[in-house]
Length: 292
Image (tube, rainbow, N blue to C red; front, side, top):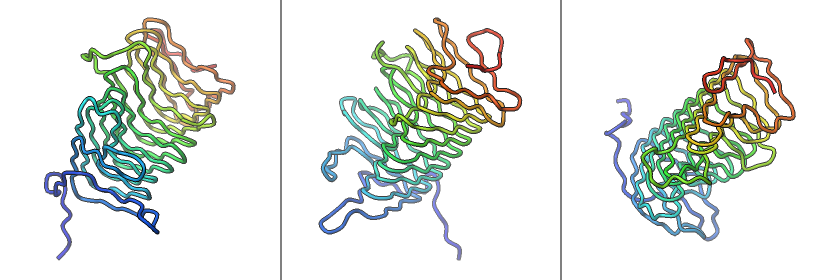
């Protein structure tokens, strides 16, 4: 008889935190979790040398497949993260988080691979994806981040960030009374001065309060994608990068703000070689071929 894997509500529900930690004489282990649901509320666990409010924690590689991971934490929780691991591979899974001051959907030290990921975070200062070192690869996924202060990131990566057929939506909670001027939203950014992002067949939308930006890193390659930013106050910015390349299929860049936005900030090298050429638009002005 063939095996029957549970899906959706058939998956067993675990309440609490799962951890794969170091212990004496052993440095972590590969963890695999599949076909279950995990829910955590304000469960602060002492893991290694840090206290973490999390669903899943590993000091090594963590593989997640066909899972639903949900976290709802108190507003006064300072840091919360749905998944914390050195390396993460996640497929066909839903991750949801709400509450807290700083909330990350997935936090990795070295590497992230995601395919079929649906991630949703609603927090004071949300970070959808956070990769502190190494590489970030996202395929066929949706990242939805809602900020209650006006600050946060959709994807905060490191050396290399790859998006293919990915929808990233970063926005403010327009009913929040906590919005402040000194925060801003960013769609894709890098922690490293030489960070590179390759964006293919994807959509990135940033709907912020003051001075939101779509992409901020050293180099970006854009192929057949739609990038947009809207600002309730201040200026919406497009791409802050030293090296900008539009390649292969046509892409579009749209900005909307009361103060006229800037398509490109700090671009030392600019290439628009897509066919047809990629186009840019500010507010209701006519579309134009993107240029430095």
